[in-house]
Structures are given as structure tokens and as C-alpha cells.
Image (cartoon, rainbow, N blue to C red; front, side):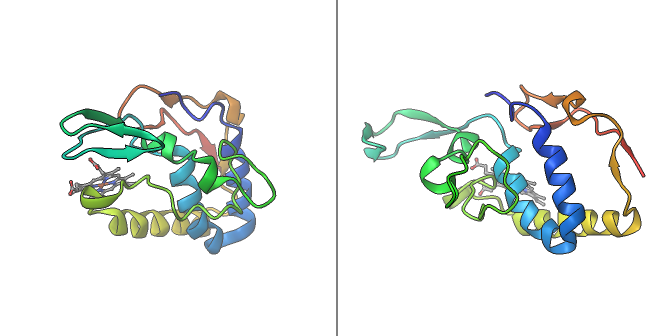
Length: 159
Ligand code: HEM
């Protein structure tokens, strides 16, 4: 799976969070989770009965790879009212229906803890260091593209 295709959105998100404060952090968690989709490679599943998805029938017993990152680019769900494509980071987008924590029986058991932890960390950080900013141009940031867990290799900051 490829990455987010450039890092400008990270800079845009940083600006929006600084401007929007705590509410922007709450909304930004879903926006960021959808956009980055941390569990980045496919989840393996086997059909226990025939199932039709997008007009294609998967027979019972056949294995499939479910790409959360692709589902999080579903144009039917994530195209905004003003036509912004799912491939763009738009912090005003309603991203609540993302599947970055999975879906169904095996949906992440720790997602509430993860959300609370991230909200606490990010709001505390922004209150303590209100001038926090990237120390390098966002285009210089590099990502782990080939791990199952996606993320930055490093995030140089200044304040
Ligand atoms: C941002 C942080 C996190 C992300 C993006 C994430 C993502 C996911 C995803 C996509 C799955 C589904 C895997 C599948 O369907 O095969 C999952 C499952 C799971 N997660 Fe998380 N997770 C996060 C944090 C956590 C935390 C903090 C915990 C525990 C403290 C946790 C515990 C679990 C467990 C136990 C499962 C397996 C559930 C099952 O198979 O029934 N996760 N997670």
C-alpha cells in the first residue's frame, strides 16, 4: 500500500489544530485516523459463506485481504458536500464513519482508550507548548510505508 502521497496535509492539519484548539483535536482524531489509517496493510479474512461486495461474489472458503486504507478512501462515503475528494485532507470533513479501528466482530477493543489517550496527549501538549510547530518543511517528513503499522519515522519540532 502506498502512503498518503506527500506530507503537506500534516502541515495543514497542524495549522487547523492550532487555530481550532481542543475541539479541533477531537475532530482531528477522526480526520487523522481516516486519512492516515495506521493499520496500513491488509487484514486477512476468509468468507464463511458466499458474500457479494461491490457486485463481486466471494465464494465460501475463499480468502480476502481487506484494505482499511482503501475503505477509508471510499468516494461514496468521504467525498464532501462541496466535492472535496477522499484523497484530500480536509479538517472540516465528517470522518466519523472511517474504519481505521476495523469493523464488526474484531473491531478494535482498545479504540476508546486510544481516543482518550490521544485527546489527552494532544490537548496537553498544545496547552503546554502553544508555539509547537514543525522544525522542518513538511515535505521532508518520511513515513514507514511498508510496515503493517503506518507512521512517521521522525517528527522534528520546535517551540
Ligand atoms: C490508534 C490506535 C489503534 C488503532 C489504529 C487500532 C486499530 C485496530 C484494528 C484495525 C483492529 C482490527 C484488527 C482486525 O480486524 O483483524 C484492532 C483490533 C484490536 N485492538 Fe486496536 N488499535 C489501536 C489501539 C489499541 C489499544 C490501545 C488497544 C488495547 C489497549 C487495542 C486492542 C485491540 C485488540 C485487543 C484488538 C483485537 C480485537 C478482536 O480481534 O476481537 N488497540 N485494532
